[in-house]
Length: 271
Image 1 (cartoon, rainbow, N blue to C red):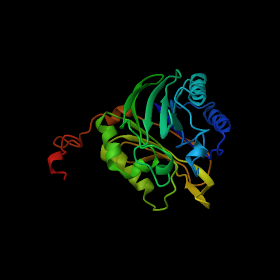
Image 2 (cartoon, one colour):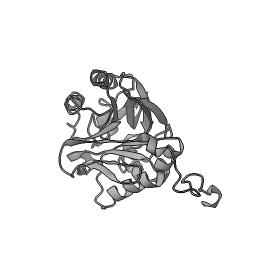
Image 3 (cartoon, rainbow, N blue to C red):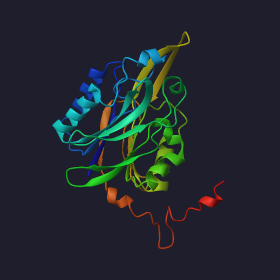
Image 4 (cartoon, rainbow, N blue to C red):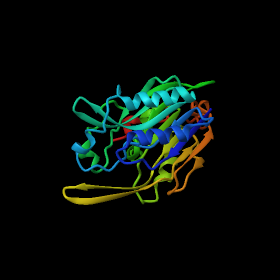
């Protein structure tokens, strides 16, 4: 089985241009699952709810339908960040669409970062896991979004729910130097595969009359279940990475004959 992560610089506010970029990056690929960044169809930096209102769409909208058509045309699965509208509420979401164009996975970001709290509702779907059927096999896939990486409970919850692969659409701005180390730890401590798709470039918006700019750090990576980096990109280039993965290697959580990552937990002691 093969997985790809795509590092993009979305055209701010232009859904059609970003869908076309998705088409180009997927075309001709042999990967089974393609992962794109957080809010990959719209861009990230917005100053108010009024700015996101015309861009956000329901799951039944034209953007999700278009992604489904891309999946069908290429016989691949797609995970991407998505600005979701549900009635008059907005969510920083991610979706998973299978090779037949079906929407099979839907996650709303639980841990909102900084000004996201002024634009979006906190996710209310928990951390779901779904079964993704590919050409020759299937795998259990979960999703986190960006700032969720800071919380070990997010990846652990997905792993306890049976996730073999965790897709992480992101728009990282941190310069702490701990990003890749922490992502490798999340994979290692749960024995899962991580597909981290970040973006590059800069965006600006006006908040309360003040111009605010963000620079995104890229560094997309695919990380194996033992914490090894299988493929990675630099912090400035638009591009794609891909790697063969073995989801079945994530199933057995034993590390020797007496120790098991999940069975050895003592929840009564964690206060």
